[in-house]
Image (tube, rainbow, N blue to C red; front, side):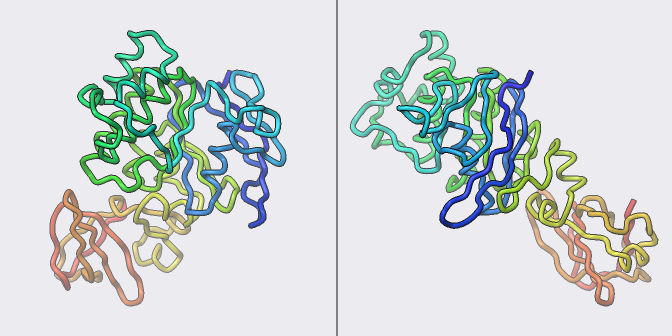
Length: 312
Protein backbone atom coordinates (compact mmCIF):
# COMPACT_ATOMS: atom_id res chain seq x y z
CA UNK A 1 0.00 0.00 0.00
CA UNK A 2 1.44 3.43 -0.93
CA UNK A 3 2.09 5.90 1.86
CA UNK A 4 0.87 9.00 0.02
CA UNK A 5 -1.78 9.05 -2.68
CA UNK A 6 -2.41 12.20 -4.71
CA UNK A 7 -5.74 11.77 -6.49
CA UNK A 8 -6.96 14.01 -9.34
CA UNK A 9 -5.78 17.30 -7.80
CA UNK A 10 -6.83 20.45 -9.66
CA UNK A 11 -6.35 24.07 -8.70
CA UNK A 12 -7.26 27.36 -10.38
CA UNK A 13 -6.22 30.83 -9.21
CA UNK A 14 -6.81 34.32 -10.53
CA UNK A 15 -3.87 33.65 -12.88
CA UNK A 16 -5.52 30.60 -14.43
CA UNK A 17 -5.24 26.83 -14.12
CA UNK A 18 -2.30 25.97 -11.87
CA UNK A 19 -2.81 22.20 -11.52
CA UNK A 20 -4.87 19.91 -13.71
CA UNK A 21 -5.91 16.40 -12.63
CA UNK A 22 -2.62 15.53 -10.91
CA UNK A 23 -2.41 11.91 -9.75
CA UNK A 24 0.48 9.77 -8.50
CA UNK A 25 1.51 7.70 -5.49
CA UNK A 26 4.53 7.76 -3.16
CA UNK A 27 5.82 4.71 -1.33
CA UNK A 28 7.24 4.65 2.18
CA UNK A 29 10.89 5.81 2.31
CA UNK A 30 10.75 6.73 -1.38
CA UNK A 31 12.70 9.73 -2.69
CA UNK A 32 10.45 11.55 -5.14
CA UNK A 33 11.39 14.58 -7.24
CA UNK A 34 8.83 16.96 -8.70
CA UNK A 35 10.46 18.69 -11.68
CA UNK A 36 9.32 21.32 -14.13
CA UNK A 37 10.01 24.80 -15.39
CA UNK A 38 9.17 27.87 -13.31
CA UNK A 39 5.40 28.31 -13.11
CA UNK A 40 4.59 24.65 -13.72
CA UNK A 41 2.76 24.30 -10.38
CA UNK A 42 5.42 22.53 -8.30
CA UNK A 43 5.24 24.70 -5.18
CA UNK A 44 1.44 24.80 -5.23
CA UNK A 45 1.36 21.02 -5.43
CA UNK A 46 3.73 20.73 -2.44
CA UNK A 47 1.54 23.06 -0.38
CA UNK A 48 -1.57 21.04 -1.24
CA UNK A 49 0.18 17.79 -0.27
CA UNK A 50 1.16 19.43 3.03
CA UNK A 51 -2.44 20.48 3.73
CA UNK A 52 -1.50 24.17 3.56
CA UNK A 53 -3.48 25.00 0.43
CA UNK A 54 -6.95 23.88 -0.59
CA UNK A 55 -7.38 22.09 -3.95
CA UNK A 56 -10.46 22.84 -6.03
CA UNK A 57 -10.96 19.12 -6.56
CA UNK A 58 -9.24 15.86 -5.75
CA UNK A 59 -7.65 14.74 -2.52
CA UNK A 60 -4.45 13.68 -0.78
CA UNK A 61 -4.35 10.72 1.59
CA UNK A 62 -1.57 9.69 3.98
CA UNK A 63 -1.72 6.07 5.10
CA UNK A 64 -5.28 5.89 3.82
CA UNK A 65 -6.39 8.93 5.85
CA UNK A 66 -7.50 12.19 4.22
CA UNK A 67 -5.07 15.12 4.40
CA UNK A 68 -7.43 18.03 5.04
CA UNK A 69 -6.85 21.44 3.52
CA UNK A 70 -7.09 24.76 5.40
CA UNK A 71 -10.80 25.05 4.57
CA UNK A 72 -11.40 21.85 6.56
CA UNK A 73 -8.86 22.33 9.36
CA UNK A 74 -8.77 24.90 12.16
CA UNK A 75 -4.97 24.89 11.91
CA UNK A 76 -3.60 24.44 8.39
CA UNK A 77 -1.22 21.56 7.79
CA UNK A 78 -0.88 17.90 8.70
CA UNK A 79 1.13 16.81 11.76
CA UNK A 80 2.78 13.94 9.87
CA UNK A 81 3.77 16.02 6.82
CA UNK A 82 6.57 18.59 7.27
CA UNK A 83 7.06 21.30 4.67
CA UNK A 84 10.08 23.57 4.22
CA UNK A 85 9.40 26.47 1.88
CA UNK A 86 11.99 28.57 0.09
CA UNK A 87 11.24 31.41 2.53
CA UNK A 88 11.56 29.67 5.90
CA UNK A 89 12.32 31.59 9.09
CA UNK A 90 13.99 30.58 12.35
CA UNK A 91 13.08 32.15 15.71
CA UNK A 92 15.37 35.09 16.39
CA UNK A 93 17.62 35.67 19.42
CA UNK A 94 17.58 32.00 20.48
CA UNK A 95 20.38 29.48 20.61
CA UNK A 96 20.08 26.59 18.16
CA UNK A 97 19.72 24.08 21.00
CA UNK A 98 16.74 26.07 22.32
CA UNK A 99 15.07 26.11 18.92
CA UNK A 100 15.45 22.35 18.62
CA UNK A 101 14.36 21.59 22.19
CA UNK A 102 11.15 23.63 21.84
CA UNK A 103 10.29 21.79 18.60
CA UNK A 104 11.17 18.27 19.73
CA UNK A 105 8.53 15.59 19.99
CA UNK A 106 10.95 12.64 19.83
CA UNK A 107 13.13 10.66 22.22
CA UNK A 108 16.55 11.97 23.20
CA UNK A 109 18.15 9.18 21.15
CA UNK A 110 16.19 10.18 18.06
CA UNK A 111 17.02 13.81 18.64
CA UNK A 112 20.77 13.08 18.77
CA UNK A 113 20.44 11.03 15.59
CA UNK A 114 18.66 13.87 13.76
CA UNK A 115 21.32 16.36 14.91
CA UNK A 116 24.03 14.04 13.60
CA UNK A 117 22.28 13.45 10.27
CA UNK A 118 21.78 17.21 9.79
CA UNK A 119 25.44 17.93 10.68
CA UNK A 120 24.62 20.67 13.19
CA UNK A 121 26.11 19.44 16.49
CA UNK A 122 28.82 22.11 16.36
CA UNK A 123 26.16 24.82 15.94
CA UNK A 124 24.04 24.07 19.03
CA UNK A 125 25.39 26.89 21.19
CA UNK A 126 25.21 29.54 18.49
CA UNK A 127 22.36 31.99 18.17
CA UNK A 128 20.24 31.84 15.02
CA UNK A 129 21.49 35.25 13.85
CA UNK A 130 25.08 33.92 13.85
CA UNK A 131 24.50 31.33 11.15
CA UNK A 132 25.12 31.16 7.42
CA UNK A 133 22.28 30.47 5.00
CA UNK A 134 23.26 26.82 4.60
CA UNK A 135 23.52 26.34 8.37
CA UNK A 136 20.09 27.89 8.89
CA UNK A 137 18.64 25.57 6.30
CA UNK A 138 20.02 22.44 7.98
CA UNK A 139 18.70 23.62 11.34
CA UNK A 140 15.28 24.33 9.82
CA UNK A 141 15.23 20.77 8.43
CA UNK A 142 16.29 19.32 11.81
CA UNK A 143 13.57 21.35 13.52
CA UNK A 144 10.96 19.83 11.20
CA UNK A 145 12.32 16.30 11.62
CA UNK A 146 12.05 16.67 15.41
CA UNK A 147 8.27 16.89 15.02
CA UNK A 148 8.50 13.23 13.91
CA UNK A 149 6.91 13.50 10.44
CA UNK A 150 6.41 10.58 8.08
CA UNK A 151 6.92 12.80 5.04
CA UNK A 152 9.27 15.75 4.46
CA UNK A 153 8.56 18.16 1.59
CA UNK A 154 11.47 20.36 0.45
CA UNK A 155 10.84 23.23 -1.97
CA UNK A 156 14.03 24.05 -3.88
CA UNK A 157 16.40 23.63 -0.91
CA UNK A 158 19.54 23.97 -3.09
CA UNK A 159 18.78 27.35 -4.61
CA UNK A 160 21.17 30.15 -3.58
CA UNK A 161 23.73 27.74 -2.09
CA UNK A 162 27.34 27.64 -3.24
CA UNK A 163 28.95 24.36 -4.30
CA UNK A 164 30.34 23.43 -0.87
CA UNK A 165 27.15 24.16 1.08
CA UNK A 166 25.08 22.38 -1.54
CA UNK A 167 27.25 19.25 -1.26
CA UNK A 168 26.75 19.19 2.53
CA UNK A 169 23.00 19.66 2.25
CA UNK A 170 22.72 16.97 -0.44
CA UNK A 171 24.42 14.52 1.93
CA UNK A 172 21.97 15.50 4.68
CA UNK A 173 18.95 15.05 2.41
CA UNK A 174 20.24 11.65 1.23
CA UNK A 175 20.59 10.46 4.85
CA UNK A 176 17.11 11.60 5.86
CA UNK A 177 15.68 8.65 3.98
CA UNK A 178 18.39 6.05 4.56
CA UNK A 179 19.15 6.77 8.23
CA UNK A 180 15.90 8.26 9.51
CA UNK A 181 13.39 6.41 7.32
CA UNK A 182 11.52 9.58 6.36
CA UNK A 183 9.84 9.75 2.95
CA UNK A 184 11.11 12.80 1.03
CA UNK A 185 9.58 14.83 -1.78
CA UNK A 186 11.93 17.34 -3.37
CA UNK A 187 11.49 20.18 -5.83
CA UNK A 188 14.75 21.09 -7.58
CA UNK A 189 15.87 22.34 -10.99
CA UNK A 190 19.33 20.97 -11.69
CA UNK A 191 19.74 17.35 -12.87
CA UNK A 192 22.85 16.85 -10.74
CA UNK A 193 20.68 17.56 -7.68
CA UNK A 194 17.90 15.17 -8.64
CA UNK A 195 19.06 12.26 -10.81
CA UNK A 196 21.48 10.65 -8.29
CA UNK A 197 19.03 11.01 -5.38
CA UNK A 198 15.58 10.25 -6.76
CA UNK A 199 13.90 6.87 -6.88
CA UNK A 200 11.24 8.41 -9.13
CA UNK A 201 10.60 11.72 -10.90
CA UNK A 202 7.29 13.39 -11.75
CA UNK A 203 7.60 16.07 -14.46
CA UNK A 204 5.06 18.91 -14.59
CA UNK A 205 4.35 21.34 -17.41
CA UNK A 206 1.74 24.06 -16.98
CA UNK A 207 0.12 22.13 -14.15
CA UNK A 208 -0.10 18.79 -15.96
CA UNK A 209 2.02 15.66 -15.57
CA UNK A 210 3.86 15.06 -18.85
CA UNK A 211 5.99 12.11 -17.71
CA UNK A 212 6.87 10.14 -14.62
CA UNK A 213 9.34 7.34 -14.11
CA UNK A 214 12.75 6.39 -12.77
CA UNK A 215 15.67 8.81 -13.25
CA UNK A 216 17.04 6.47 -15.95
CA UNK A 217 13.73 6.46 -17.83
CA UNK A 218 13.32 10.22 -17.61
CA UNK A 219 16.92 10.97 -18.66
CA UNK A 220 17.44 8.34 -21.34
CA UNK A 221 13.90 8.23 -22.74
CA UNK A 222 12.31 11.67 -22.38
CA UNK A 223 8.81 11.87 -23.78
CA UNK A 224 9.42 15.18 -25.53
CA UNK A 225 11.88 18.07 -25.84
CA UNK A 226 10.49 19.78 -22.75
CA UNK A 227 11.45 16.80 -20.56
CA UNK A 228 14.77 16.31 -22.34
CA UNK A 229 15.75 19.97 -21.84
CA UNK A 230 15.02 19.86 -18.08
CA UNK A 231 17.69 17.22 -17.52
CA UNK A 232 20.60 18.48 -19.58
CA UNK A 233 22.01 18.77 -23.07
CA UNK A 234 20.44 16.58 -25.77
CA UNK A 235 20.25 15.99 -29.51
CA UNK A 236 16.90 15.45 -31.21
CA UNK A 237 17.54 13.15 -34.16
CA UNK A 238 15.31 14.13 -37.07
CA UNK A 239 15.10 12.24 -40.36
CA UNK A 240 17.95 14.24 -41.97
CA UNK A 241 20.31 13.68 -39.03
CA UNK A 242 19.43 9.99 -38.90
CA UNK A 243 20.38 9.61 -42.58
CA UNK A 244 23.67 11.43 -42.14
CA UNK A 245 24.51 9.26 -39.14
CA UNK A 246 23.51 6.17 -41.07
CA UNK A 247 21.10 5.22 -38.28
CA UNK A 248 17.55 5.44 -39.65
CA UNK A 249 16.26 3.69 -36.52
CA UNK A 250 17.28 6.74 -34.44
CA UNK A 251 14.75 9.03 -36.15
CA UNK A 252 12.61 10.85 -33.59
CA UNK A 253 14.80 9.81 -30.67
CA UNK A 254 16.78 11.87 -28.20
CA UNK A 255 20.49 11.22 -27.78
CA UNK A 256 22.43 12.65 -24.87
CA UNK A 257 25.92 13.95 -25.68
CA UNK A 258 27.56 10.98 -23.94
CA UNK A 259 25.72 8.58 -26.25
CA UNK A 260 27.79 9.83 -29.19
CA UNK A 261 31.49 9.20 -29.72
CA UNK A 262 33.97 11.38 -31.59
CA UNK A 263 36.57 9.73 -33.83
CA UNK A 264 39.42 11.86 -35.15
CA UNK A 265 39.51 11.53 -38.91
CA UNK A 266 41.04 13.85 -41.50
CA UNK A 267 38.31 12.97 -43.95
CA UNK A 268 35.50 13.20 -41.40
CA UNK A 269 32.48 15.17 -42.56
CA UNK A 270 31.86 16.77 -39.14
CA UNK A 271 33.90 19.69 -37.80
CA UNK A 272 34.34 20.98 -34.24
CA UNK A 273 32.55 24.35 -34.01
CA UNK A 274 32.50 24.94 -30.25
CA UNK A 275 34.32 23.60 -27.17
CA UNK A 276 32.98 24.11 -23.62
CA UNK A 277 34.92 22.94 -20.56
CA UNK A 278 32.93 21.58 -17.59
CA UNK A 279 35.76 20.25 -15.42
CA UNK A 280 35.22 16.51 -15.71
CA UNK A 281 34.34 16.65 -19.41
CA UNK A 282 34.17 18.83 -22.52
CA UNK A 283 30.94 19.53 -24.35
CA UNK A 284 31.80 19.60 -28.04
CA UNK A 285 29.50 21.09 -30.64
CA UNK A 286 29.87 19.52 -34.09
CA UNK A 287 28.69 20.96 -37.37
CA UNK A 288 28.02 19.51 -40.81
CA UNK A 289 26.36 21.79 -43.36
CA UNK A 290 23.25 23.06 -41.52
CA UNK A 291 23.28 20.20 -38.99
CA UNK A 292 24.58 20.37 -35.42
CA UNK A 293 25.22 17.81 -32.69
CA UNK A 294 26.51 18.02 -29.13
CA UNK A 295 28.97 15.37 -27.92
CA UNK A 296 30.65 14.99 -24.51
CA UNK A 297 34.30 13.97 -24.33
CA UNK A 298 36.93 13.62 -21.62
CA UNK A 299 39.46 14.83 -24.16
CA UNK A 300 39.82 18.38 -25.42
CA UNK A 301 39.25 18.96 -29.12
CA UNK A 302 40.37 21.87 -31.24
CA UNK A 303 38.09 24.17 -33.18
CA UNK A 304 37.92 23.14 -36.82
CA UNK A 305 39.13 19.56 -36.29
CA UNK A 306 37.60 17.07 -38.69
CA UNK A 307 35.95 14.08 -37.06
CA UNK A 308 33.46 11.34 -37.68
CA UNK A 309 30.76 10.29 -35.24
CA UNK A 310 29.76 6.97 -33.80
CA UNK A 311 26.13 6.88 -32.68
CA UNK A 312 26.35 3.40 -31.16
